[in-house]
Image 1 (cartoon, rainbow, N blue to C red):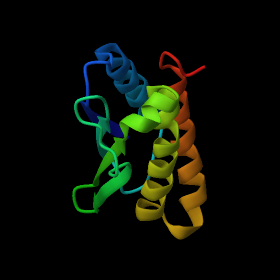
Image 2 (image 1 turned 90 degrees about the vertical axis):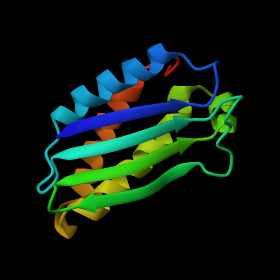
Image 3 (image 1 turned 60 degrees about the vertical axis):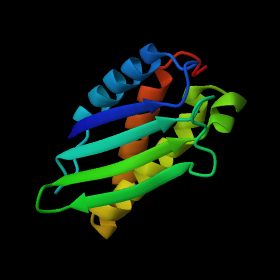
Image 4 (image 1 turned 180 degrees about the vertical axis):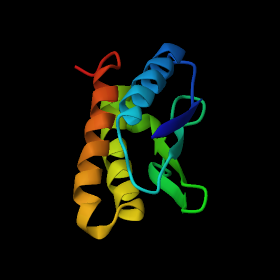
Length: 135
């Protein structure tokens, strides 16, 4: 499965290197995942910061699946307060787990949804583990 990841950083305190590392790791992990009827996942990630905090908007939003195009789009928003409590990696992990479950619920047949959610969650955790501060 192909992954398209765009990132919006809410402040200068975030490192572009972190998002580049995340993109590379997620792309590599998602390439190994196969979901019937889904060829591409387009994720728009917002990491809140001092300029744009994204408070009150955290979570997985606007998940849209097109069976005809075999494509899913989703927004993932991580508020600045969550990033400040741990690290970008620590704050992002639970949101990616939620995203994995929601993708599986939307795209996978009922009898395979749990297995697809688990496979996607493992792929996301591998990518997060590659980030600095994932400790």
